[in-house]
Image (cartoon, rainbow, N blue to C red):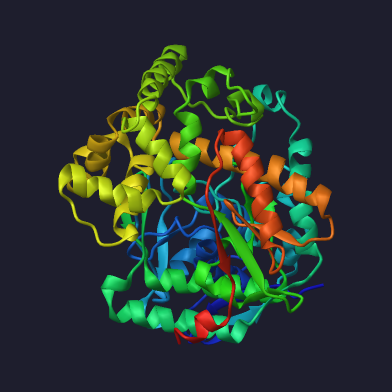
Length: 510
């Protein structure tokens, strides 16, 4: 059995800290409980990169700490705060945000591993059920569960009225072909190269703020703290090295998650399968491509023809409320019908959108539209991607803010499409990305993966949400399957691109 480890900054001498700071006030003090809290500051970012903020604070849910450490969890937190090991943002909003914690600056160092010795913690970890078995229990530590904005948070289980509409175990079986290859043990990583790259990128970002990564969420544009990214990436490299993938599907958007999917894209160049190179086949412009289904009134009314996907085909599409009431849904369908009328004439709004998506050059085409219609001259595709992301992921109310200029530009170019996306997000900003990801997971696991597993059961495959990863030499076959299956569901053949995982890409950056 693989030894369980904590990961903490290398310059933290936990025994020295205990000697210098009295523990007499903590009933039943246990050293591993301190280490567990410190480990979470790296563990959480390794599972969900979107939970941390620009300042590097990691939200930790008190209820879960109570389950693992006991009622005295706050004594351990206070001890670490008073000892100057960690600090807190001291911000707590009921049901929205847990208090955030981070290592104090002097301890923002590279990581070391420490074996776990506490028998109670070890038994809890060994007794945790795998989430892809359909359990409703919270998965913690090596099987941590997260929800948007809350770290180490219990997922709301599928409620009784919803659960009766579909068989969760049957859905879980769709992920078995991927689970099989994780268990086969063929995935390996050049960990020395990956760690060297991770350390180098962290140093570059630490010196140059312009190199920081950013993301788009319901709250707007957010920057990624480099040290928190470094911590999460370090742990994912170690998990892949040790074969601790924790592969499972979530019960919200039904994506399949693992240390491989959580790992930074660049790091995957150090990953191979039984010594063979891997290649990922990605759905180009995946979000704008999948959005075409939500723009079609036939999808909502289940009247799509020719093999196109209907909303009723996806058993978990509406397990959470999307529309406030039937009138809200009817209004959205009416908007879709009106928009589809503008798909007939060449040059019309919808006609242009579908042409841009099916070409595989959506962002390049969008750049030209911006220049022709509004006079904006963007140099690269990366400059225009945030425009679509702000449309898909931010709250409708965000449009009036200064940072929402890209959202307003998209609205001016595609007014009807913007109106549809705004209608879907009227009840909740997360509704649109949730629907898109549920559609993506259905096509990927119920159609693409199922077919590959049936036709070539000997072929190792993995998924990265909108991508399929396989051995170099089989990319032509996999891409053809993806084209056919996505094409049937969407009503047109989308574009795909290939990315070969090559170690030299990392070596050249070091």
